[in-house]
Image (cartoon, rainbow, N blue to C red; front, side, top):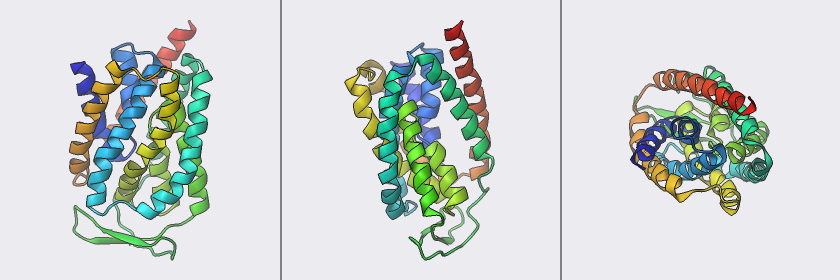
Length: 268
């Protein structure tokens, strides 16, 4: 139980710093270190995503980094995708889920390479224009939203992946908001943290109904994630985004290999 708590603390801190939820790290750690069945690990991941969002979202809102109006718009599409993904996951074999999880980790690692190094631009679009105070530089960053339609479509996909794999839709939302919609990276991370809890709660009901949420695993993991997310969200706002991305990419590649190995072992 203590090991699960410390694993949760680590992934909660890392997930809150990058706005992607702790599930992307929690699930491969639970399956590889403790041998937890992947669907039970996904159930724990979903609850941990809710904990991450609750802890980190409150911190980011207090700092004015969350674009709440944009979050509410995108969440309409995301919850629909999460519901569809959660239903689908119940009927997919664990081996296929492990292989798909590995592919998603590789996608996330490569997509993060394209993210801008810092929040440097100022661009008004007339659509949901807003601003925030950069915690590192002390400067005011102003921006508007571009390509909202594409953002909605990507949000549905993000919700679907979240419901299917229990990893939080932030792995898709953060790159899309930053690269396509013109949202600065720090604001993308903060807004994603605010949204992922609602997304995860949608699919959590499905996993609970089918008995994939084990309290012995979920409770210590969620408590660890909750504490880790509070610490990570406070540290992450002051660190350079580039350093966070590089460290996280290495972890994602390592875990993707581990998930593929698990899938192959299941087949053999």
